[in-house]
Length: 367
Image (tube, rainbow, N blue to C red; front, side):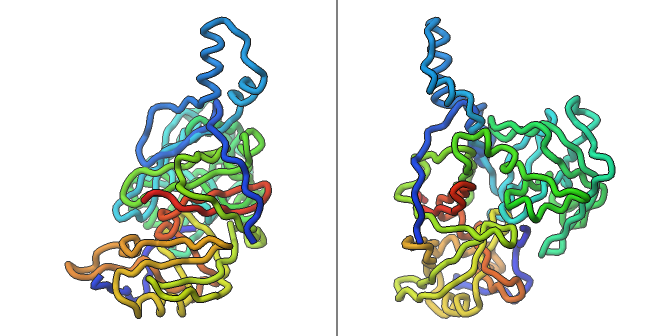
């Protein structure tokens, strides 16, 4: 879901935990997406398999199985002020920089560099299939649908639906670094007609060691997405899991309150979604007012199950407005209908998106 800076008046600064899955080590196809392009990743089990082959020995079956998993990791890189994070994705042999978006479910090629199906020997057009999408910030696009082989890190999906733009809005056209979106919400909100198409994660999850992906976005530097495993080195404490409501097609959950700075925790039921495709943190007006009425630069704590997630005050200063003021990274969710935990929040946490059991996990990390 694409929400960038609020058009409302800028806020100026002086400026039911669930079962916890076992952390898994990377497997053969595991991949991580960083905010820069690393060398191709080869997992621990894959390296073990190579060692057995080198010495003409028979590898144990569990090593073989692990090495054949479709897991992986990939680097994701922020644009200026962390407005969005771009990740290299290969489609039919062509590499594009896509915005991974847990707030939408379309795989779009609609940016500066466009996927060209004529250059791919594995592309197939879906006759009669079209798509049309619009976002809360006024951007949108429409076009035709193809299937092709898609690779993110070392995780590969054959027959992935790719929505190729024929018309795009000015917002997309002006973003010269963003080549499109890779939606990671639920299939129910995919916009392809006459039949909705599955997301990359939906297609990949059966081949992963565990049906999950993680987001480790960072402030002003490359971060990582992993598919199929949880990298214990990326978080510094336990992970708290909460149930997900998929009725609206989002990674939707309930936050149980907030605290500003060192102030008392205020209990409140806050219907929320975790959205990597939205820049800011959109909260109920009462929370926004409570925050900006305190001393500038205060931290914000948000309750998620038994976990108290802290967003440092420095993360809430989004971008400069003048030499002495900044646009606030916390804005009101008035008119949206729910709270959006966008990148202002997500880059302060380690986040697990898990399909089975269906839950979201949040944990601390080194900032």
